[in-house]
Image 1 (spheres, rainbow, N blue to C red):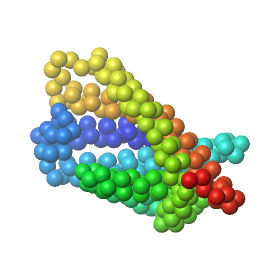
Image 2: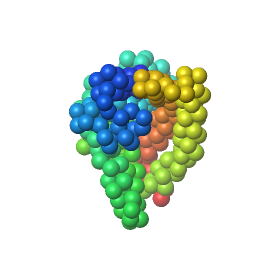
Image 3: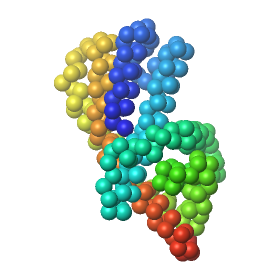
Length: 240
């Protein structure tokens, strides 16, 4: 995942500094709001590519964790293989996650809507694990994740609640690290090129700091998936 974060930061720098030289550059909000359609489309494409390869990295971590749980070491090429060879299905799951997040944002104004979307997201949260570890299709992976979570919603919810403090700490550390690293490169008036370069460095540093948290999420959810699947295979009744 990390190389693609750095590449995305470099791509944004090149686009805003060398291609769309008249576009605003001092904040993401202004770039999104006032950028020409071509730049907006390009940045959206870069974001989708970054998201897709982030899923590849996450999936590879899932495969590696599963290997450790089974007492075997998984080479990097072998860990990456399931995601790269099934990129279409991975893209479909990523699109579904994006749609759910978008729906959550739209329905967040109502308590019932927000709770409904949260319920659906939790029920489908292990779909990627089924897709990568069991080789099922994207649709069947969603069905399996939905079935595994049935009767275990408190277990699934508890895991993600437990990860929230670690996530907040990781985001805080990423922001602090980005500021500390970029301060020496931030003159009082850096100009367009300097501002964009500092921003790219900050994004790359933040990406480095966030990698352990992403690995933690992958490990915790893989353990949960393995446990729930083992219970289903053994015919153990749900706890809740």
